[in-house]
Image (cartoon, rainbow over all chains, first blue to last red; front, side, top):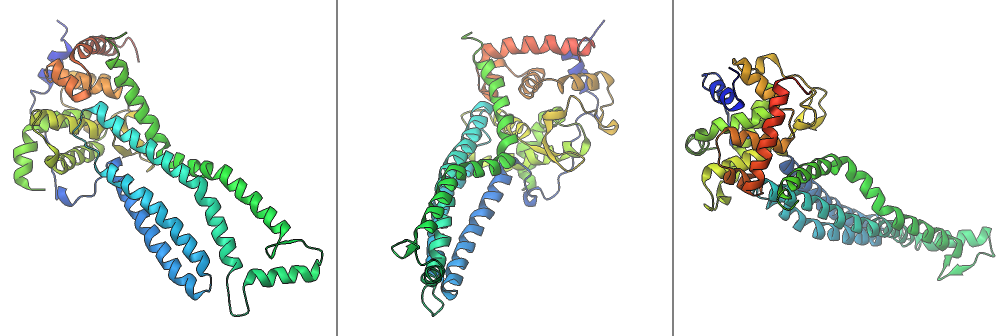
Amino acid sequence: MEKSIEEIWKDGFLKSDALIAPKINKLYSQKSIHIIDKFKRMFRKNLIAIAVGSLSFLIVSYFLHIAVMGVLFFIMMMALLFINIPLLRELENIDKGQNSYDYLKTFSHWIQKQIAVNKRFATFMYPILFVAIVVGAWYSDTGNGYLGERIASGILVVFPDTYLVFGVPLFAIVIGLIIIALLIIFGGRIYMWDLNVIYGRVLKKLDELLEDIEKIRSQDTA
Amino acid sequence: MSTDFYNTYILPFSGIIIKLCRAYTNSQEDFEDYYQEVCLQIWRSRDNFREESEWSTYVYRISLNVCLTLLKKKKNNVQHYASDYLPAEETEDNYAFSDESLNQLYDAIRQLSEIDRAIIMLYLEEKPHQEIADIIGTNANNIGVRVKRIKIRLKKLLDGKIN
């Protein structure tokens, strides 16, 4: 007579070779391969790199006489840190002992929140970084006055009719504003392109798993 | 990890951990990685255990959640979710059980969705519907309905009626 799946299961695991646990060595010191732990490690590394990098640049910028650029860049990066440290804490608090639905939902929410927060930030970050570079360069002082003023004077020699606004050529202001507008428009999108590489596949999979559980949950209301 | 913790709190449940990890992998190497990771995560989550449920339920939850969200390396070193390609990929010969019927059952289980795999494994472990529902995050009635459907599908798969 044909066996039921329950019988196949029971009989199959009665054999002694079926349930041999793999040998575990120095488990505690092993590096986790779990996706959440990988994200945590990536996040921590990025935040440390941002802190160290922006502080180093602040110091270097002083000696390179581009302190304005260094300060603006530092403020921007500190804001990025300030926004992302709570996100890291939230990631660390995801409890793998919850039921699967809550666990997957929490993880999915975390990814979506982190994307939304950083996308919004990226909309401002790229234009502000651009402004930091331009303003920083303009006010860089190597002993012969500000670089921007020297460039403006040079332009006036070649094009004496150049219209200046607060000492800055008008066409340069217009070009700068166009670049800022483009960065505002595309800043979020540039960030999303990056994110798709990191989170796209994970998010898709989480959505599929959640959808499957939601189907089961909604059976009694259907 | 303390050997005592492993022997006392994990080893008694190693059976279900092994069975679950087997359902989400198809090579000995991946299976060992999964088993090790599940044990590591149980150890790391030990302080979050609130005694609102049985320790065994807690172990099942962690095991399942880890299996559902683990990435494994494919042979070309690109990381994938294990379940993304299990149905299309054959299991390694040395990964098989000595019982042929059990191998066929596992092959069929691996063709189910990830959530269905979890449900049927817990059902076959004779867990009450309520406990399965607590682990998955739904209610017991719905688990009953889903188990019936999964069994029908498994039967068809075993009979070779569908691929």
